[in-house]
Image (cartoon, rainbow, N blue to C red; front, side, top):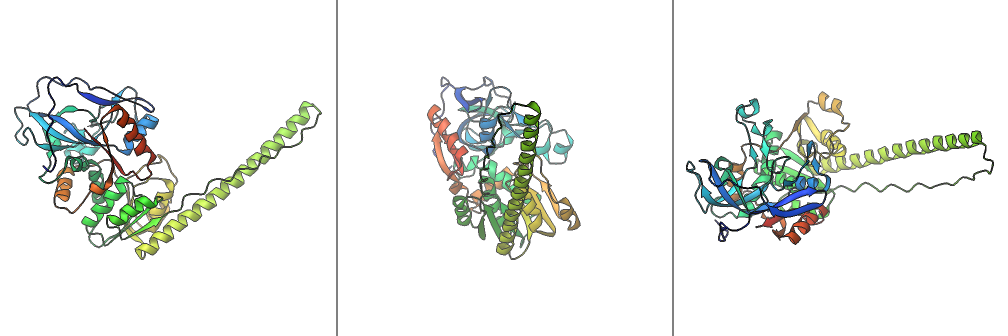
Length: 411
């Protein structure tokens, strides 16, 4: 291991965890009781590195993420790595002192998705920090050894924790079917978009163009090897409507008042319709700008577009810039429902595929990092201790975005 793994917890040390109680209500309190005796295939792990994911922030700010709703206090965190403290009697692949990356989903192993190798779609999956399952931002947890992957010599525990977001990038590129020589557009340069960029290059993409709103994130994309970047101008703020005050006659006649109110309401509806049409025109212009900008940088249409944003605007652009028989991969899901040009995709046989977490990725992710083909260390922009003060500041830093890409706790 390339990191000091001293500081093994004593039996008397309180096992604390980060609990989400409500909107913007995070507390450090004792974790759920751990079993006194390990199961034969379990390991006890001292957590050392836990990253903050966008879903963690969403739970903190909204108490939900997509269809998953927090209804009772929950321990957060799912991007994690630690040091093995104790192993069960049947564990042969790990020993105390080993650094491990924890894959955060436990599955039934019996359903059709599990039987066909797509266990990420198991209907009974128990995934860290997905209600009602508790997460891994704690001092210690007990976890099945089959989901604990030994971190190779030379990698840090932080890199082990980064296996989780990197796994999303690997799964996305697999689902997108990236082949050597493909021209790839990546929409969104957050942590997932940036790992998608690196994995796409490993998979042999000849060009990878990244689009985002933030120049700082695009600078990171360029540093990580993007062929080119495109800064998409932010949508203009709405102009404030003039509030025209009409003279109100002194005549209190109810009929006259009703007529006046009806005229005002009709005018308001007319103005709203004009404003809506103007907004749609501006949106279309910006979509056209994104499409033309990406086409210019790619020297034509893309073979693959991976949308790590998941908004109507980005998905519409993704379909538009994909060549006939190309592939669009939807990773981000910022909008649950959207209006898309499906006919355009159908007549050009553009394949649209979705991504939900990942499967069979951790060994490859560790190998990609150990072989230096992927370097996730630049993505870790902020580090915090596991204290009450730092807990709040870390999540606020991640929520603000700004220059923060990946925020990491060092326990």
